[in-house]
Length: 144
Ligand code: DQA
Image (cartoon, rainbow, N blue to C red; front, side, top):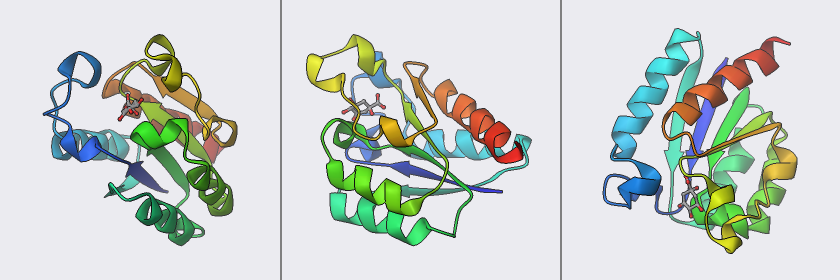
């Protein structure tokens, strides 16, 4: 099974962002940790990050039929980017939304996730471990 892990705007800046919310790992370090967790579950992982919403949307279009499941952390786009909601619908793949920080316990504007209705699970506030949980959830979903 192939899982695509998509990171959106500003996630390339991990390691330089507020560590109390996002921890200290860089994106490369986080991705290599996710790859290890995936292989422990027998899942192959692919990674994509962009700061351009259109590129994120086009990646979702291209994934239809080319991945078995998705983990998405779109960053701030999570809260308002309806084009990403629609592209996720077009991708038509089982998806888990993951956030490093606890978006429910932060600013009012972070409370809404426009992609949540299209994700079968959300993991928020667990740091890098949240991605391991996301992989485990996808593994169960794909096996079931
Ligand atoms: C984030 C939470 C978002 O609110 C924020 O804009 C991010 C990262 C997270 O992983 O906690 O950039 O998605």
